[in-house]
Image (cartoon, helix red, strand yellow):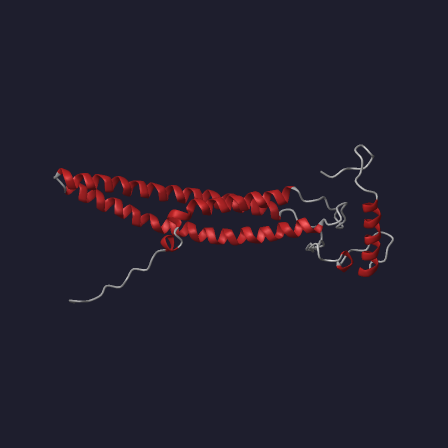
Length: 219
C-alpha cells in the first residue's frame, strides 16, 4: 500500500539498558557487591548457640549481612534479565555479519569492497564482544549466587537478629539514646542511660591512656 507507515520496531532490552556502553560498569557493581558481602560474612562476631556474644552489638553485623544478602539477591534478578538480553542480542549481530559477508562476496569493484571489508570486520568484532559479554555475565551470576549461598549458610542462632546500635549525631543527647541495661543495673532506658553517662564522664575525666598502661588502646 502506497504511503503506508511501517510499524516502528521496539528497542530491544539490550538497547534499552544501553548494555553496550554500561556493561563494564554493571560487572564492576556486581563484583563490588560480592566483595562487600564476603567482607561482612568473614567479620561476623562469634555467637553461642543461645545467642550470647562477647561483642555487645553482635546482632548488628548479622542484620547488615542480611540487608546485603537482600541487595545481592535483587541484583541477581536484574542481572539474569541482562543475561537474557545479551542472549537475545546474539542472533541480531550474527545476522548482521552474514548480511555483510554476503554483500561483500558480490562486490567486484575495489572502492565499495574496501568499505564492506571494514564493515565485515566491525560486525564480526561486535559479535565477538557480545559473546564475551555473555560469558562474563554467566560467570558473574555464578559467583554472586555462590557468595549469597555462603553468606546464608551462617545465621544468627535461634532467631532473626535485631539492630541494637542506634547511630546519633553530635546534637543528640546521650541520655536520649535507647541503651541496653548494663550488668547489675536496671534495664529501663532512663536508668541505663544515666549510668552509662556517669561511666563515660568518669572515663573522659581520666584523659588519654598512656602507652603500655595495661589497657588495650584503640587504633
